Length: 77
Image 1 (cartoon, rainbow, N blue to C red):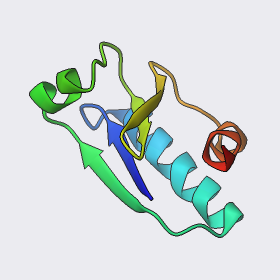
Image 2 (image 1 turned 180 degrees about the vertical axis):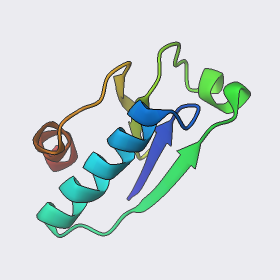
Image 3 (image 1 turned 90 degrees about the vertical axis):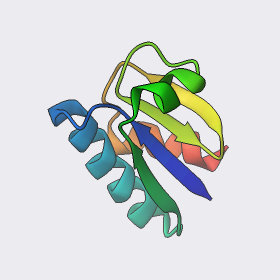
Image 4 (image 1 turned 90 degrees about the horizontal axis):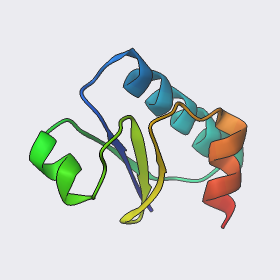
């Protein structure tokens, strides 16, 4: 599994990355977490509002910091 955090590296992006790690740890799942800060790459995903969460190439959240529990629910599907 590959998880991408799209954003400029701002406080919200860091929080989303931390919550994603916590969700993966809680689920016992191993995943590659990639932080994408390049505006062109972010736009290539069709994302206009960051931070965004991409799981295995699919954008699952944009514009908000999800709680670890919300991320767990997305990763289970």
